[in-house]
Length: 346
Ligand code: GLA
Figure 1 (tube, helix red, strand yellow):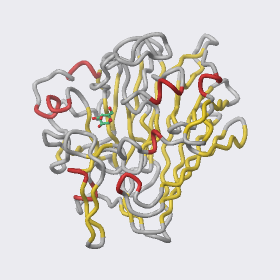
Figure 2: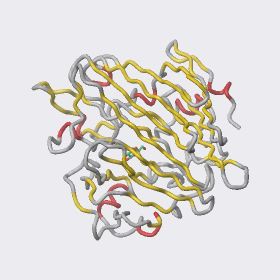
Figure 3: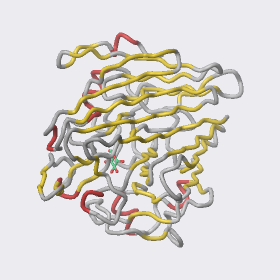
Figure 4: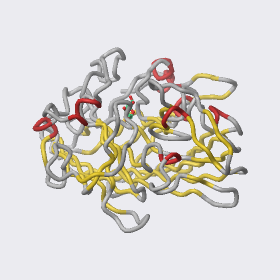
């Protein structure tokens, strides 16, 4: 059981708290406005119990000290920007470097470490708002971001993102929840069965920056047919070596920016399946290769190597430096919109 008081703190003059959303069938999602982080998702299982399918921590204090981006809203730019540099309208911008020589997930003061304004609209819905000031972590423009979390009655969690800017900027918003469909604290996710609706992915260089787009055909990255994660994760393959496992952006099979099915994952021990739907063109499949057991998880077990996985819906990494990728530029007067749904079946 999470203790709400462990989440009630004041940071930079703003109050943090823990909010609980519920649907009719007993699905429950706990979210803190510190980083907009999903702390737990209780999925109703067959035998009248619930299974918590999310890796998380039990207090703000622990979230302040973690480096995995557990459950967090990520911005302004989810994933990497090469050397933290890009140009827009002839001007070059330099971001904080926080991942080798690159910028990752919006920098150390990214959205995951900000206190969002929160309003619980009803039992099902939480509205979060954050104003990222012009120049924050090196990004241009005042960017107003609204994220709405809704627990729907079909046992899905919907995340709706909206943003606008007063100066041309780049953004790539996502959520970095780590899932274990067998239950938080139940061990490695190597037995999970995964399907990804993508014929192509963006292979990366040694620093995990994309070097193009390639087919998954004939590689251990092919998840077009349901495959156990552990079956090929340690196969001899340059891409898997670089990332110490799966940590790759998939180019989703889709026509435009319609909401479509990106992936599904099943935990064989619980029998729970999660389906992922998104309007985004890409999805990072990450198998928790950098989790190192240093943080105590809310389950009582450390958050350890490959004990949970992320399906981060997104635009492609380093898009500002790849004009051939779908654009991540947002101009004043435009509204950025994105939706991702995690749906659970048991
Ligand atoms: C993303 C990245 C990974 C790793 C995690 C956070 O998924 O692609 O390489 O940095 O975030 O630890």
